[in-house]
Length: 287
Ligand code: OGA
Ligand code: MN
Image 1 (spheres, protein in one colour):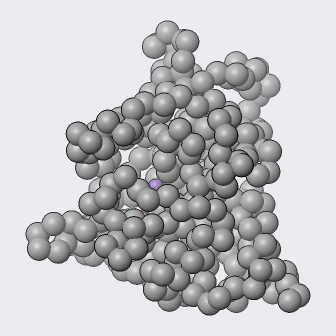
Image 2 (cartoon, helix red, strand yellow; image 1 turned 120 degrees about the vertical axis):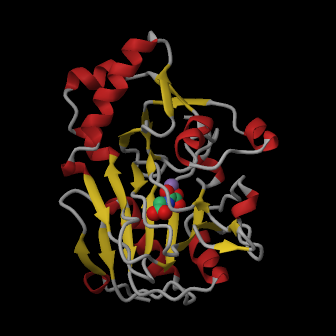
């Protein structure tokens, strides 16, 4: 099947990254050529917006699988019962218990699953219920932020590793983990600059929500350098703000963008469903 690229690409979301696509029904059985094209756009634009989607969970899973194996999130309490590849992100309550993760609170800048030994390369977040205001999600283009760094800073961080802590994130922004979950998520270290497993592009691979320390630097120096880098990569020119509509699906490149979310009024319900995309086996080697 021929792909009419100019009909699919609707508009850029910012000057450096993000694109809205049109004419693709994620619920449909997709032609391989379309999937390949979407994959190339995902890598090129780093963040893809599909509007007006109507997806069953199985369809969300099927579409997501085209981009890599799916992770089963370790927060089992927030997984869809029918489809464990689907993580509920929500403040909706059932029998007095919140069905989803993150509820209505502010969520600081983070990369999804940066705390894994072989971290995720993508996430697809699909919205079913959106409050009238609040709950915007912000994305930072960590590839452009890295590229624009002064050479002196690039040299300063080259070859350095940083500690990533899920525990730190949970204390600030999420629900505490169980003892068993804690044991499964020890701190890990990753290079501060991640080379993208598919595109080879370099991006800053640190985030205020989980990066606690640059390995080998005294704490004060590490804190100061991280603060400087976080100020840099969250400058407006690297950030896209997404104001959600029901039916939006956002597919992001989780190897070179990080995101955060505003809080919202918990009297309103918000429900999104997320899949998390891991690198294909041959791309998952340590880096
Ligand atoms: C996520 C996340 C943001 C949001 O699902 O990974 O960070 O807008 N969610 O709820
Ligand atoms: Mn997230």
